[in-house]
Image 1 (spheres, rainbow, N blue to C red):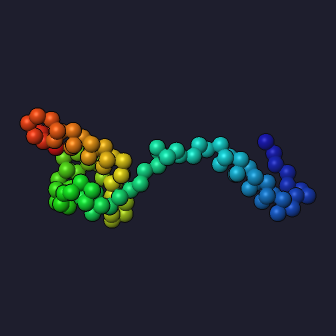
Image 2 (spheres, rainbow, N blue to C red; image 1 turned 30 degrees about the vertical axis):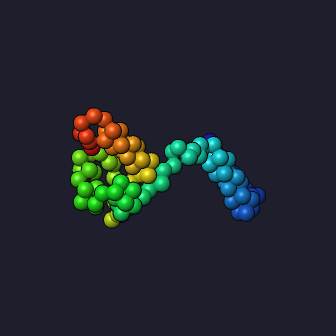
Length: 101
């Protein structure tokens, strides 16, 4: 394929490139609200679950909660914390106390 740019102004070329980029980006599916998740801090998670930060750290090590490291911060997805909270609540209401939570 050979490209000839004789007689094309730079502004026209840049405009056409911009249109092509816009067209390509328009075809990319945007994340739905289900795919977007709000990240919350360790302190917010501990407050929500009514636990201490060392307990939160232990639960994370045990795999009960999944953390995400962003730079030097450790964050949690709000929806995953709520799912974990539902599991803990379910265990607490089963006969025999809070086994597994």
